[in-house]
Image 1: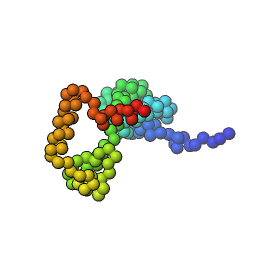
Image 2: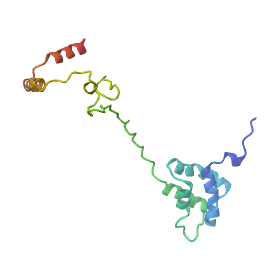
Image 3: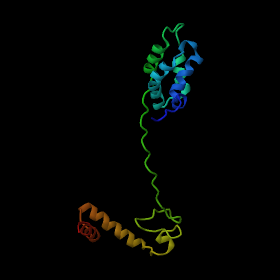
Image 4: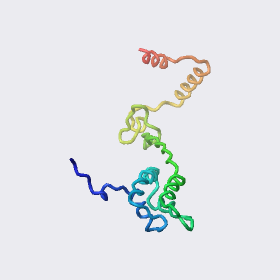
Length: 163
């Protein structure tokens, strides 16, 4: 037969608070058996985020002049003043980091590395387009968007995705 640990070692903080109520206010003195019977209800307060001081305050504040039956009074207050269950905290979305070029401030493209913190244009790895070429390309893109025409690059991308 295994030995049980001493009663004091097995007691919870909820039990301890209940035993101290009588020292805070003698009208709420409870027996060991009464404390054990109310222990689970008091523990529910802690499960809902209340601290020991909050539990003692709720049990001892606004007491009537006479408490005829401390056990029944404390049991009723443990239920009547039970704090609400804490609302689950939504987990914050993970921060999203975006690498930007330290030279021009443009974001690094998909899969484009920023060597030394610089994009290909600032690093010199990509030739700059002439103004006329940029305007011509933008015109083609606008025309394609208006007419719904597929470009050669779009068709290649769609074929690659479908394969």
